[in-house]
Length: 414
Image (cartoon, rainbow, N blue to C red):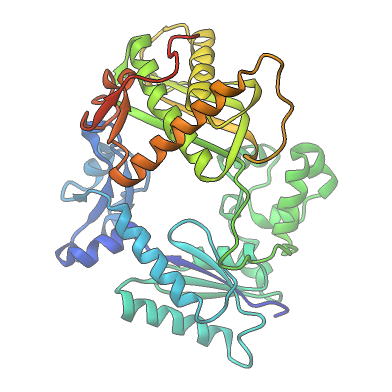
């Protein structure tokens, strides 16, 4: 092969990590699930026995229990998943410095320059053995000459398997698979392709690319290239950091929100988190987007361009509330909301100030927010809160502990 690319995919990752602490769950159907009391009641991961019983990731807990009455449910422990993810990447780095994460449980490895005369299958099997022996986990590995086919290979056979997709055999293996198996082909694209009788990756590969360009735009050409094995994207090094395109936060509240006061309190909390993350990344943005999901699960999205770039929680909050008041008519209660800042630039990027900007007030506000960041970093996120957040603190799944401060900003200045 011209390149040697691995894609390592941990099998049933969350569930497998939980079974390290709960070995008694290895021989029973088990799933990791959200808290149904807080309305995050979906299946996050399941073991092989639960999978054989028909349990699916992302389905509601009640649906899973209907299929599998004996299903054992465990809560998620994200700190454990992060810990093992970092340890696994340390293992991969023994083979190459080109280790690109794809979520907590997946990584691409480029061994082209480091594998030498070793057989790629032998190396893949060695990694699987070490994961099994050193971490009590299992993984599947796809071996190919590009990232897209390596990803397909790791999905092709599970659990604990190695699959080779080469320039010689890819048409036999890949082209028979449904289009939905191809990376970046989501539900909407799958449906659009189905409408023009493109059902398999082979159908996609043999379709006229000019038609795909007209039908799907540049995404159509990209998918045609992937289907034909023409992916040339590089595996990034372990220290590579993707450009942050947006920073956001959202929550599904424990109870439906039925008043503007509850919405306001929740947007205060979300805006504080988003602003803090922007400052952490040394970024600012001038487009604020909100997402609102009502109790009928309909989703509404709106955005607004600000007059200047900001990493200030009050600016974000004001824009979010303006968009909500302007667009939501309270036809029903609200289940969840989110806020996001986009069109980002560096905090240090020069910017033309408005004649009406109050520079002293802005500097004072920035200093206050950075001081609050330091306090929360030392004592926890709940150590300081704005009084406006107190109303909703229980509803957004946080206890009202900590010190509540009156906001230094004029919070009602809408």
